[in-house]
Length: 249
Image (cartoon, rainbow, N blue to C red; front, side, top):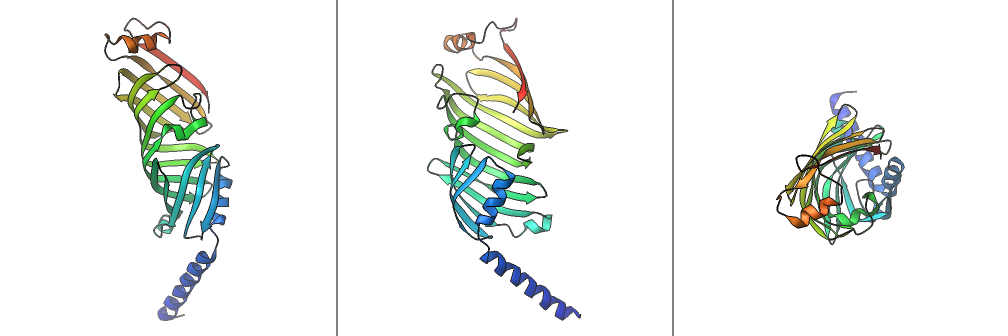
């Protein structure tokens, strides 16, 4: 086969694949994604393999909003199957890229803002006990077998307020994530808060977590903050409240 014939053959093959993808229902992608992540549900799916939408995204029972996706034509160059995504609702907007690889799903360049109240059962607190907004700046976050196995970037909690068991202003905090030898490591700190907060978190690919750090009032004369912290017990000799937790996620 000469080069000219080969070019025409390749062009025809690409055109056929594009036609096939345009005729392929978006529900196939939705079914593939929910099989990889059983906690995820997509309702009201429309479109085709290259461009589609879902009227509602539900994760672990929490409705997150509608999502639109468009095929990333550069993805095959990195041996992956990728889409640009935009998850949106009246009070939230998340944008990024999702890549499907061999037995893994990766979110890349995830940016935006979502209220804490939208996360519901994902938080270890009673419903509606915490207000604020989460702003991810994540270069990548990877799931394998439905578990988080790697993450890199920052996650900000902005203007948080506690509503249970008492009302209190918490302020803003930041989590800096980086890949670890077996999972994810993170450093947590206050950004603008009446609390001084510093902690280290590790999460293995098997779901075991370990978080430890210290918490104290930024202003020793801040009676309201000190009274809130008093519920944690007695501080150490430096006036800080150390903590150390381990468990399974």
